[in-house]
Image 1 (cartoon, rainbow, N blue to C red):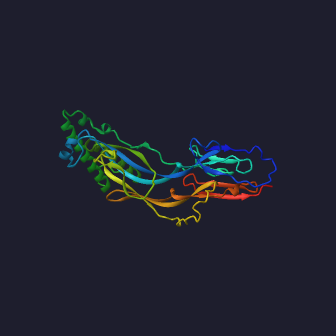
Image 2: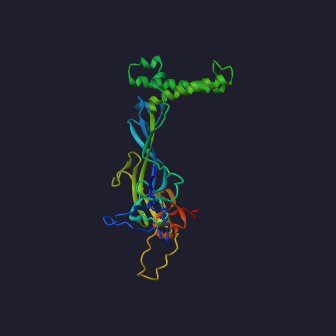
Image 3: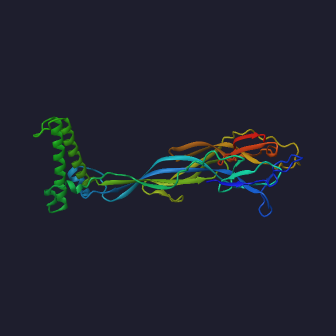
Length: 358
């Protein structure tokens, strides 16, 4: 929830003989002693990587899979495998310590209501926040709901009474072949006990499929999966052509940035220079105007990629690539009540309007 600072001028009922304007000065730690200090934001890029981890568990008869079922490359030991599902880009704002200003409290101005974010970014003057900031993805783990049959439920009495694992595997394979043969006979209409209608046929085939699936797990094993989200926050300050963001391994998942077991993924930052060139000031000795500051952001292109493919791309308006501008203190004199709403992400003006008090 946003913090609300209510600044009520104690002498607002006094008759004013002159027009005063709101003064906003750069914040100087240890020197600035009065007023409300606020920050303009800097824009942060959040990279959210969603990946699936699959755990492979070998079957009880895995070593006999090729001998009895001609199954090749069946895992003999447990292992994990990882896969990146998607990469998404988001932007959010945080207070920029380099852009701090203080609104001086003066009795002859009309800036009584100021709203700040918890970290001090200016949101509104004489206005209410229209909407909350976007919810960003957070690191999390989501277990997969995998339906798995219990292979022991499908072992026949003959299989269970076998004297060795090899014999049990052989009898299980024979049972699988019998199931496949019965399924084929049913579908051809040549079974000894044919179903009465299509629905009964469907149920019989489904039962055979389930039996085969359960017994095949004894050879092929089974898998369980979970989905994990990883996030990386980047505060761009200049153009970057190719900077290491993270490393990802097919078998280990996310690894340290210096771990060669993972493939490198990079980020690029490019200022699209959407702002017109600023005109130089004519008078170099002109005093800086003390009024409300805001930012005109510039749009920046962001890409995440590996050596073989592009994973995600987007463009965002970013505060630190833009310019700090002056709103004008005259807007907050007693002649007008001015309402201003700033973006918490870019510091740009979202809405501004003024009205004459009656």
